[in-house]
Amino acid sequence: MKIDLPGIDDQQTCIFEQATKEAIAQLQANLQAPKLAPQTEVDEGAYPRTHLLREQEGWEPPHPDLVGAYFRHFQANFSGYHSDGKLAILLGLSSDRRIREFKQGRRAVPYGVWRTFLVMTGRAPQDVLPVLAYMA
Image (tube, rainbow, N blue to C red; front, side, top):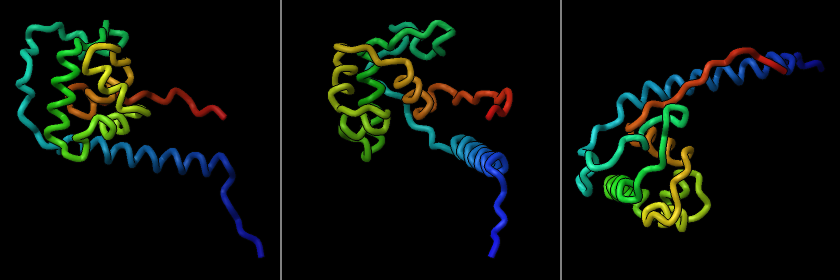
């Protein structure tokens, strides 16, 4: 018995195409996310908006007051992430201690973690990178 399988290059192309279709579907679904009332704990106008920029646009870590307000607002609206530990897991962190340090200002939130949070909360657009070539 002989089973004809596509070559590795064809298999990789198929996987890439499927993953791209799934990503497009997710981006479309993102447009249907509910709109929630903004946080009211702090006056965001009293702080610079550089925490909303991309890294190459002049991003600066958010003030701890904003971090705490944004995180608490998120946690109040999504009961599945009510604990700092669950929020840490969502953001790819290994410890709830990091979340507490960010909220308290003892540690600045790294760009990647903050950007992920901004995208998940609809405060920043999802970045989609171009594929310049397929290189094996």
